Length: 501
Image (cartoon, rainbow, N blue to C red; front, side, top):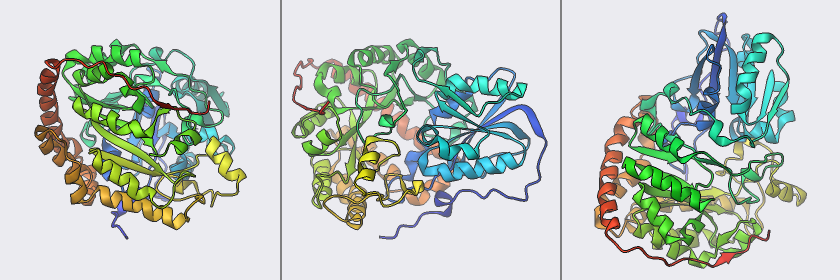
């Protein structure tokens, strides 16, 4: 089915070739998050839930005698600024918007700016990125940025800068949230407490060749203080897996609990191994989790080399989260080698039967230099290397038990069902007190793509979301008091699918 997508959500703002060159201002830096086309099947609202932490964290390491600006092209405010022309432009590069990043780099270089490219795509494809930049930052940008700017000042810029991710994470300065346009986001409190994940799934970008990211943690007091200082009622943890170290998560929950705020995070389903930890999360303000279920077939989980509970136990674990007032956004990858045409119907039926408040679907995508990419390349199953299509919304390989067209149609079917009135109603929470907020969220987040580009363009995101967020926070504070009065269960889960490692 053809979906209407506003031009502003699918085409990057024009870079005027006739823009006069302004004088380059010394010690002026600009950090850019490039535009990327939005998937018409998914919610446009998810792109403005929180700002990117990568660039605001890099900005925090800017020397004090430099001015730095942040620009996100996805906020629909036009092309990045050029008056004054920044001395240095740092651009984060992901494979899906690499082409746009290179266009921006060329435009600024032609006007005298020094361009630095960094990000995951630079790590995986440095030879591709190098011709488009004056220098590459490969690895931890926070560790490199200050040195790069000093070398620009001193006229000794190197072609490549490298840093690993092994230095103590607690030593990183807090992100520069003061640079953010607060009206444009649901919340500016995007927090990150840990880096890395205890899994190394073959399809995940964390398994990219050359990327070594040990699991590191910041002090829980740092996180609580950042959350409190930002003045927002709601935070989103952007960690790959906040629950990789259960005892750390427990300590973090105890630090957050006195704030009486709410938050959500990505965790793996094995966080439910210990019901007391789930209870601690709820009492600390966790209202939602993003869980990579990936598949409902154990063979697919094993092939992906992911250590995970048996899929037959997923439903019980979801119920445990729901019993503690925690909503579940389930993430599912479609197109594994054990998937057949019935995977789409089976997945959406399971989502509805278990009342997942939200779900996110991804077409399996082989990111460059991951084990999955090398496998499909060796088997001759890659269809092309147009990185702009490697966005988990397009089929870029030949599935094993269906055609590329069937996989694309099944992906579309899953979102059609999920966003339907019938499915939204079927998945409503069993607790009637949670239903109004759930319906408001579902219809604003999932069924309002027709208006999201207007909310984003006119900076109304925070104004529209804030009443719903505060309503949810107050309701959850009342829920916590009821939860505290209930006896604690000690039942633990134990069945695990071997990851083959």
